[in-house]
Amino acid sequence: MMAVTFRHLAEADIPLMVAMETAAWGPLGASEETIRRRLLLGHVMIVAMVENAIAGAICFVETSQDPRQTENFPRTFATYCSLARSEPARSLYVYNLGVRPEFRGTDMARRLLSQLIDHGREVGVRWLVGDGRCPSYAGAQDDFPDKVRPDPAFRQIIDDWHRTGVMPSVKSITKDPLLRFYRRVLHCEFLHLAPNFLPEDLSSGGFRVIFAVDLD
Image (cartoon, rainbow, N blue to C red; front, side, top):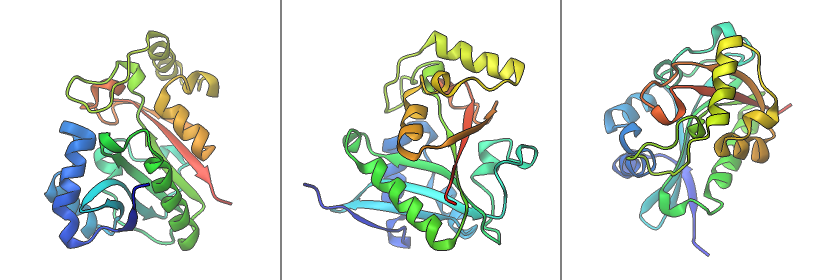
């Protein structure tokens, strides 16, 4: 069984974090400059160390925002992942759950989510909030580490949601494997669809499905 140590990202870990970002996210991975800027904004980055490498990480910011107030929710990923820490902390806005490809299929992502939940309870927030990718919309990009096939039926579900504003059933939303994972592991509630949230993520059609976990 592999030995995993969880800790907050340290200055000396930043090059290792950049390597993990590239391995996990390909061209969408954060640069050293971006990581440093987020840390200056008060973000928390919990990393999973296996020997001398970062096997995975979960990154978030404590915020006074209420995710149910859709009109105030960040409209783009650039804004979402660049919020400054604010008080009182009501929510943890999670913008990165990254795992190296060689550690996928293990319990690494679940263990990182457990670290997130522990942090949320420690600081007393009510909400854990995520921007769920939905790669079944168009299928994983050729240069993207994860391999998800396109699902035309799921794409129609998302397009209809965007066109009508009517949220589909949980069963329909969880046709996508990543959204199904979050629902199964976190028992999360899907809040709203965010179009053009990250246009560079072609596999998700630029969409994100915003979800939340109520810790109360």
